[in-house]
Image (tube, rainbow, N blue to C red; front, side):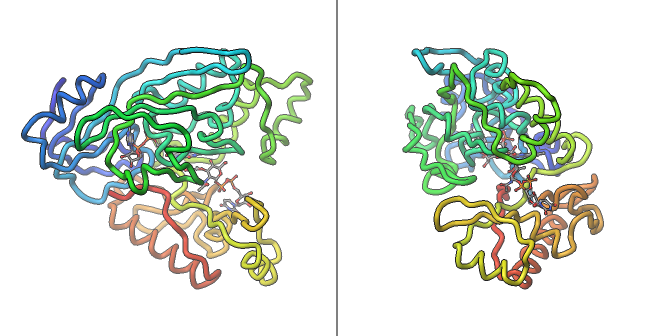
Length: 338
Ligand code: FAD
Ligand code: EPU
């Protein structure tokens, strides 16, 4: 295992921000992690685990140790009549896990196709898209506690998953290195096509037997049309979460803005697309210096190439302020700012 010093993280974050870390190591397995963390020189240093860097905004150099896992094993570990249990190491590219499952006709993550990043990060914010969330198929995970290097196991309820949320963003923030994720997938897949645009696109296929492969392909197509490719335009997906508000608050806003969209989350809570709020504030497609708001999706802040983190932070604050003034709603960021 090689440990790099004063190492640039530019190619390890999809915003393409050029910051350095004091130490950087790529690790293949749990032994290498414990060996690395046992080194005296890292004892009192900050540690940061990264995957694909697709949900991170670096704002300054990191004076500590950055660990990136390159483990890449996926196995079908067991099965019963209804379910197959698939185990993937943290360094596996998320979409490769999706393809592995789709090719075996194991249902449950096809709507999560093409989400950038690695498997180890998926539980951190309980990734979700097009009507599916990781928590719906999550069985358990394995990891290592950073402080005492003890092996840990988390069940789904231990993870306290919520919308773009988990225990790893709260009480256990930066405490656990996730090394393996085990999913419980359906051997007899039930399609989840409730998200409007998927239904619309599937009907265009004029096909009777829709498979999870069809759903996966359509999700990829929708995403390629709407979201910027980080290889070409720096971004970290949705910069903000969609606000969840009470029905009373929603009705009040709707009386002012009759076209306000909303998705029922429960009998008392409605989720509003932040992209709509940001668009209505006039930001969509706007460029300010080296950064801006994507022309097809107002939730996505983009870096045109030479953007500085301060420019992104300034734009983020401007958006929060304007949305608050216009709609009296406080946007929460989704991206991890470091
Ligand atoms: P990183 O960005 O490297 O890390 C994210 C966080 O997880 C950091 O806090 C990091 O410290 C922590 N972390 C990473 N790996 C580990 C580990 N092994 N153990 C412990 N902590 C760890 N997200 C969605 O939910 N739905 C979407 O539809 C979606 N679309 C996106 C589209 C685009 C174009 C982009 C750029 C991003 C999108 N995202 C989406 C966000 C992002 O892809 C996910 O959050 C993804 O899970 C991040 O994975 P990563 O490996 O890049 O994590
Ligand atoms: N909308 C606008 N203008 C915009 C963008 C969206 O008016 O510029 C409104 C439209 O009414 C549209 C609705 O928002 O119908 C929903 O848009 P979209 O389907 O693009 O989804 P989203 O709510 O903007 C969320 C996730 C995405 C995920 C998609 C698909 C969050 C914060 N974002 O976006 O996740 O891919 O749904 O499920 O929940 C991410 O987390 O990084 C991410 C990309």
